Figure 1: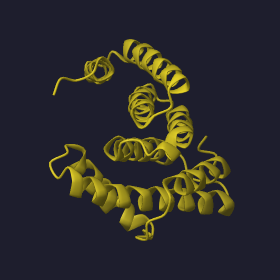
Figure 2 (figure 1 turned 90 degrees about the vertical axis):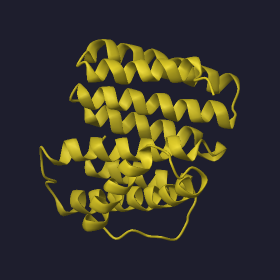
Figure 3 (figure 1 turned 60 degrees about the vertical axis):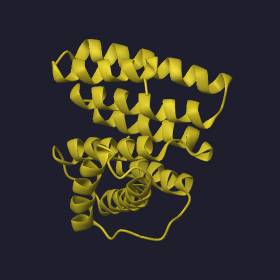
Length: 190
């Protein structure tokens, strides 16, 4: 199957990031994200919703590389909440969750929460993320057992399970995203 023009453009963002050409990668990722959001507004479908998640993930990766993980978190959570009711591709959403954790990790490795309220909010956000990633990991594993992101998802889940309790009961993706948004805001992650 031939990759779509958007998939090719996203691949180019990742190639630029590997070359440490962060300015070009960020500019291209911004353009791709704007285009996918515009298409989503014109035609709300599962395909356009998946495109928004895929482009938001590429944009977030560029933001992380530019040392702006808060913007990465805000963009991912906004994109995911915007399209969650349309059930975007689960593998794309799983990849977005992995990137979301990388952004959180970048922030948390540089500073510690100041208050008990912030610590609890970070724990709540991390637990919601871990539970959503768990659900997506098993769903993608059943439908596409050779998906390349499964290995990263497994490693991320192993780490998250050592930090928080993972709720293994399925819940609506939109509810998990709402929990992550409120927790990230209360924790000062966005």
